Length: 273
Image (cartoon, rainbow, N blue to C red; front, side):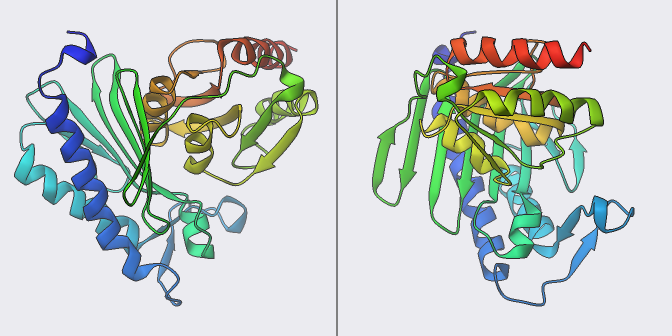
């Protein structure tokens, strides 16, 4: 069934926003409060610092409670509490705080990622930033930015040349040595490179502010929502081979098919060395 023909899309959309409301209510009392207990999930020392906080866990618990009430038969995949089976063929993909390092540091470039996926990928995505009240929604060719009472359609930029692109990634090293080398081959070909925005970079791409996001080492809960939002806004998201990226790994998100093709050629050429 085509996405636009799904009779349950209004309900799924309403539930996604209810999840964002619940997550925000759990997170905001703990943001910038000082002394928030932080655990390191990596166990490998500061260089691999992978934090999780009470806010992450409380937000996912809050979202799971909403789903238990409103969509009890759907499956769930969440970063903090793993998988829960379902019977409808739909899975809610939850990342309660994407960008926990930024959250711990007090910066507002973290977000709540919510997606609904069928077997072949995401149907709906929502990137929510509760502190500044922004939401970036996408499903079935419809993409919308909202903040308070403001509602605006979103469309990616129509940039065609790498030389005119603004490129983002979260970590300067990107991933493995080979992946980092590929990114460093691409970066000088663009107009501007920025770092450290986590999921907010994908939101900016969907909103028409930037052109490229290149990352590696992702999990499904990191990328499912951004894929849905960006594709609905007219962008392209694949892995570095041009295949679907929604299950994680390497991701190349682009504002247009032209810049996607150009960036993909550079990444593949460097990885092939």
